[in-house]
Image (cartoon, rainbow over all chains, first blue to last red; front, top):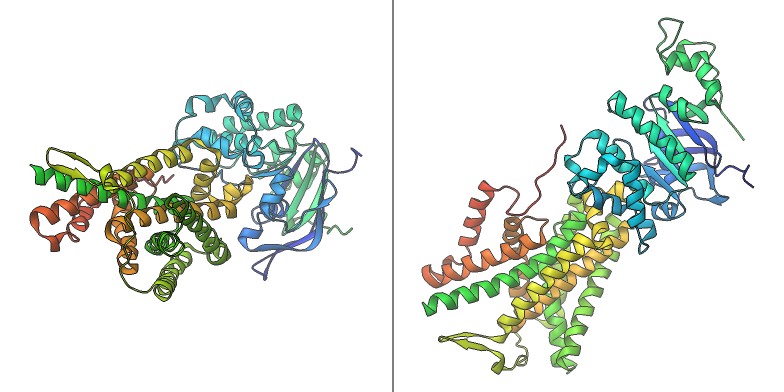
Length: 267
Length: 292
């Protein structure tokens, strides 16, 4: 049973506003208790993939037009976000999106929406343990907090929901290297201590591959490469484009490299 | 001196009523950022529901009162379900224009059912409840409206600050997609805020009806009076709505009493302009937080 993936995305295509195709046959498998990183350049379709899973495509006029998304064996594609979140999938949106006019603590309390009516004090204490930087700010309005504090806040807010699957969209965006290091340490800690399965979308491939068990690389709405993090780290193409350790000189895109393995996954 | 105090009491009372009417308006704005132009009509519906239950159905007062409030709550719910829900996710201006249309439809409907006459409630509160001291008389309905205003202020203040549902409602107003990502039931929040707003509006409609009588045009025009009140108090502050209401009420009643009755409707707007120059977000409004 446990070998079966928690989440299985089978060959999905996503179209926005009935005309703009963003994903063209994406397949992913995410095993329980793992961290899976989703890498790729801007516009590759990483965020759209996450939103297809969490149901947040719908309010943006997007739709999964082909393929299936199975979570714990249930078909969840094109379901409403409030139904998907109640199954235990919580997405942390890109660009940190706090409730600016709510205090830090009120922000965290919104995380209890899927478990409304249940006690939440202990969860608050747990969040403050993971993110002690939030404690002195608990009564301040979130709009006035720093980028690092906000990233901790939005992750903590998501954890309040006791997610089984956490979708993290670019947690390192615009943060100082030391803060990024701290955030990634906590992501790993959450995965190990809470057993939370995590899909990590990142531009910072180096950091992401350090903590992830498995990785996928996306380009132009397709998965072009996948493998254990260790393998990906050693792959010359990944080194070239995402880890900044290239030896080939002037290569800016995967299109410049013939060796790049382009393939489309079909089931 | 007696004249002054009488005007002060009148002003406070009418102010509390404006505040109460504005509270429902603020509630919709707080959860969905929608300016509801049909608010005056919701208020009038409350008064007419009560009138029908008391005069036509001859129900006992408390039953009629609760019944009218329940009808208002249901009306808010239905309005959200039929008219506003299809517009979730559309630009706000569409929704606001929809409320302008709703105002016309509601008014037409009320004229069709109840006509444009002025109706009076049967005497509701016994006159012996009025308080007289030093030659000044406070009619019981004034006491009623003030205490309802204070009770609602405390109740909704606490509701939005401390209850989980209140916090979810504020989160939806603040950032809808983030609220969705955390599983906040946005459609339920909108339905609830419209229902509560219609209930509060209906309540102020009933009290205004007791004081001035029930007429479609008079009551729905209070919907416009709500604008200076909420802009003054800050569009998103419940306490601000009450205080804005009291300020506008006092300004109106003192202008009417000491200057001229015809200036009564102008002075509040002049005060509004002055206050907005000094405090563009109103007295208690939240200042837009912009990260640069």
